[in-house]
Length: 179
Image (cartoon, rainbow, N blue to C red; front, side, top):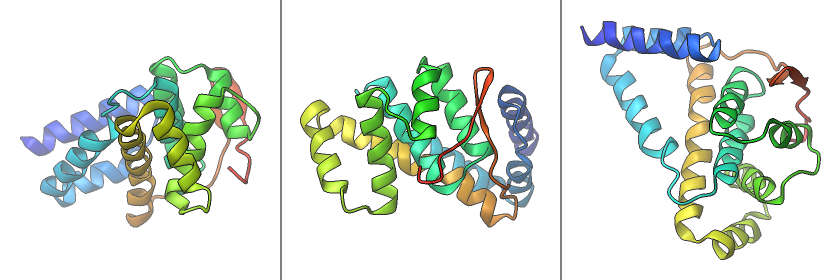
């Protein structure tokens, strides 16, 4: 019964985002306990925004997915950001490596630096903490960290895809390699 519910949930996720989640179905069949633990981890960290500004939080999630993937998982992160109200032009600029909203850029740059352990991490952390406080820092850190979990799990189960363009609204955006 639980397994059936998890498959229905996954099919709804697939329909909502036009996404092939075969690896989630496989995980459900392998271990419902494993699927539930993954879901709890994602929900506990990846959906809590605290008091982080929407675009900063969404940009950190896009960066987190982008660190591990440049295709379907980045697309979902972008779709979720648009659902939350983040402007498509800002998302497209982040992906293309173009100048955009400074707050969103800060969240994006922080997410990348955090997950890459970049030399500029301390400066970005200080800028975020000064501007929005520690709760925002924690929220965007959790968002970036959990956004990378889906592509990592896909790779672990042998379902990683090749890079592709990401669609923002009706436009395809080529992801800048350095991003």
